[in-house]
View 1 (cartoon, rainbow, N blue to C red):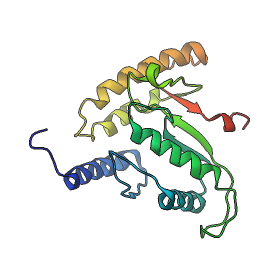
View 2 (view 1 turned 135 degrees about the horizontal axis):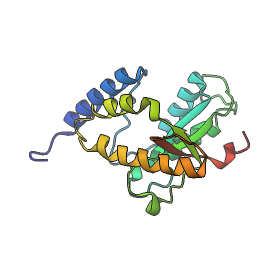
View 3 (view 1 turned 90 degrees about the vertical axis):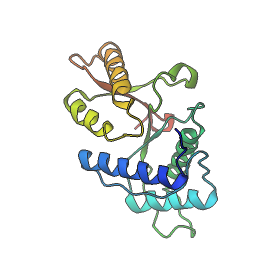
Length: 187
């Protein structure tokens, strides 16, 4: 864009959009200001994520696809989430919250049209037909990315096609495909 927005302007815009999305979805949201492009999650931030997971004690962690090589920030986010999720059960003195059970980790599809390059192949499908209108409304709040709702409708319909044939989800018209991590496969 011309003129190029400042980093602070981009952060403010994205935060405003995320808050609007969360309001539509009825979700609570927290910001940690770890940066973007590049996202670097060093030891201090890793421990902060571990602290957050132990405090919250999630059953499920949704994160970016770990091999999204076209978007290194996505892969870094997934790496950090996986690391923190695997250390929730260990005891140590560096984190003030007590150990917690391992959460299940599931990666979501973040970039339309790149699954062949990033080797994203869902092994779990969720029928979102009944909530599609609400999801589309939420994506409409991403004014800095006005194409998102239309593009992800294409993806949701495609994943529904897969879900109908690969997972016997008859009647599914919109779906999301996820990849459950191998360590969680036995759960």
